[in-house]
Amino acid sequence: MNESGRPPASPGEVSKSSWARILKRTVKEFKRDELADRAAGLTYYAILALFPALLVLVALLGLAGHSATQTVLNNIQKLAPGSSRDVITHAVTQLQSTGGTSSVLAVVGLLGALWSASGYIAAFIRTSNAVYDVPEGRPAWKVLPLRVGMTLLLMILACVSALIVVLTGGLARQAGTMLGVGDTALTVWSIAKWPVLVVLVGLMLAILYWAAPNAKDRGFKFVSLGSLLALLIWLVASAGFAFYVANFGSYNKTYGALAGIIIFLVWLWITNLALLLGLEFDAEIARERAVVAGRPADQEPYVEPRDTRKWTDEDRDSAGRTGRTDRPDDERRE
Image (cartoon, rainbow, N blue to C red; front, side, top):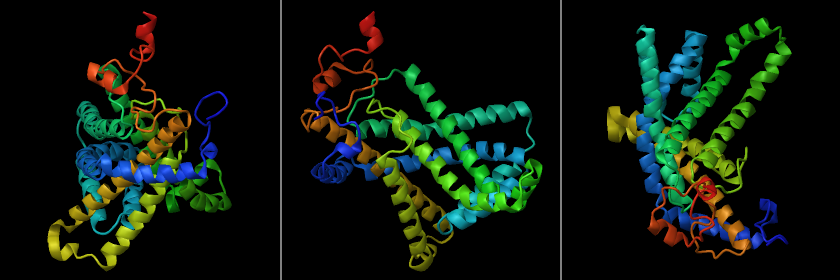
């Protein structure tokens, strides 16, 4: 504990023995919270959200022309594991070919797609509360705008990421000519765009980890140890899964024409496993800070909730909170 009686200000203040406990509890809580099953549930919501999200992505990429969308598809062919790339490519191609509707219908369709895609965020919010062992206390008028806003923001970042991937080859040269940038700058960009892409993905993870749970923790952090762990595990697991599918997998023999879909589903499940493992790691770091500050290790929730207005009496009793935190700040002022 610090002299002020508060949790350590940074992960560097946590002792080596504490890190061992954090890792041990991360594995234990991952099993206890049944995150493998929750990752499967998130995969289901991801499938429901994927094609509406692709619709929005295709609509926005359409502003950059057909070549931009084709460049994205070419990169999907390089990056996605196995025949799952065909599933995404086919979906994007079909969505692209259904253009020509009226502008009003297009706007309505995009709004509907945005709402459908937000179903994944809603599921992630519920899961993140389970990971932090804190009941949802935010009222619907807070959660719904948060859900849609997070979806829109993450879609925008996904579109920016897609445009970064698009800016290569001839398209990059055209952009360079318009901006008056020489070949040297384009060469540097062809290398630097991948670290920029990693930064954007990290930002998307940071937004998810910070905004989803009903937990204050330590505020927004552009990079957390959990997000770094999630990104590293996802990269390694995706590469390993792609290698397995290419060299040892028998999905085509077992599932036939459905092989691409099955591979894509497994890959999405692995992605969600990595996301939840990183989230659990951040949650256990928060628990360790609370323990170092003097809170019992088994007391839950171990972080301050953002809002408790929707808490039931049972939630308040199980949390063991005093009148100081039984109500949100604005209710206490009243």
